[in-house]
Length: 321
Length: 194
Image 1 (cartoon, rainbow over the protein chains, first blue to last red):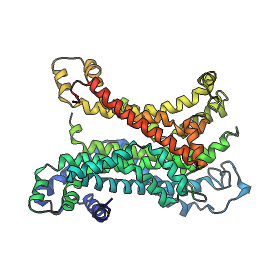
Image 2: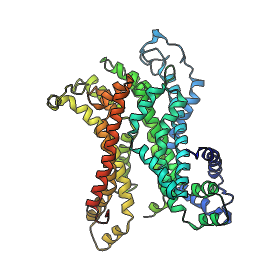
Image 3: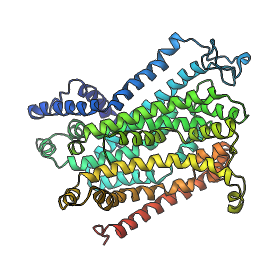
Image 4: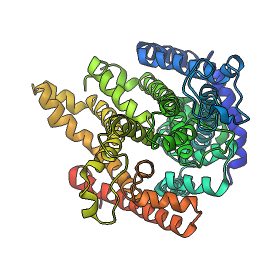
């Protein structure tokens, strides 16, 4: 816990260097030797990624879903604030493309704002968890010794708790809004990330270039942010991709149990739980469950495909067989 | 595994589908199709307090069991795929091929057994899922198990019950880890704890 201030500070550094890394990839301070090599690695990675048509389709899918959720409401205007009891459970028609839910909200519009919540929480929780987990794991692995043992026992203890149960308890206690929701999900997700990054760090810290930084008097934070994390970035990005999908599923689960964000806000899981009630009234209200359900599936499957392709792209060991 | 073939894409696709689908949505869909649309199977899990009572309603068991096993299948096949892929590039696979073992023998005799090693860890870790129960499945099908009890306790903010369940599930995790470690030593002669 004592590492939060430096962690938060270098967290911003990581965010910056990561955005710089993607398009140009010029790790200043890494010297001319490594300046050319990572670029070719990225290009090779991109080739492997592009080879995977499913992954490309998934990227298109994600872009489409994001546009649908954020640009959609500007084009397809619906009233998502007031209930409209005249339209309760109305079937799909020209006025309401996917019908209405039990409170007369238009389903398409509801999908959009629910999607906003799901995507925001998914992305934010993934970023928070991966950032913190990365810094924690890298620090722990790099420093080593007693500090490492201590920090990792905390992670082990966290991992032995059944996450979904504790997440449910936390949601009950806090009545979460979007922000709290993000942290509730991230609170468990960073543990796994920390463990992975630590493992990666253990192999990286013995490399010559990391040793060299130590010898010429570089600070620990510099080694971690400039050298360890950029070299572990493959693992980290893959993990982040899966984290988004998993966070969306967890949020959907909580929403389904009625413990997610509170009305009038909604998310896709919350919409499904409304569907369950009316499904059992033995009438075919299919528009209550198919749209949000398939929205969740499409989003998560797309993120999983992307993550899988990224892993293939980064893991050079598995590429040539 | 034939990586990057049509078969790989289809099977991976199915398991991704299972992985990306929330458990409760699988349940919902099955209820919609088999109970609401064609009235074939009851939408609820068997109600009862003893094993006998629950087993006496076999038709009611079908939907919950199918939906939960679909999700689990997705999870395990995914782990297994990556585990097999890791193992395929190992030296011993090349050795086995070099000495002329058939592809089937390489896969089932060598790779499969070694890939199971990493699955064991996960089996140990998944023990708490059995104890904690499939909360979502139990809520969808109203199955009177631990998951549903936990959910109801959560809704009523019944801290004692919540705490009790969490402690039991935690103990199960630790026990599962221990079992996984022990079975490592039993199954892999290279592993020795001394």
